[in-house]
Image (cartoon, rainbow, N blue to C red):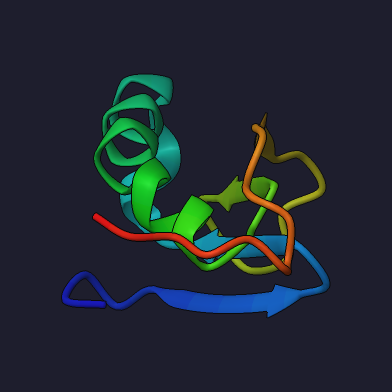
Length: 73
């Protein structure tokens, strides 16, 4: 990430960590911008942290195609 961030994933959850996620407005904008890509990769949850050891996170849950579904743009 350009803003010294980190991304990791486990199962169907992606965890994004960056200081830019200090505001809910920024988190919402990023989520709206990347949700379709996350769905193509079959993620169903995105967690946003503004620093790595933060106890709290903003979490978005959403539907994605099943693993066997073919996705085309």
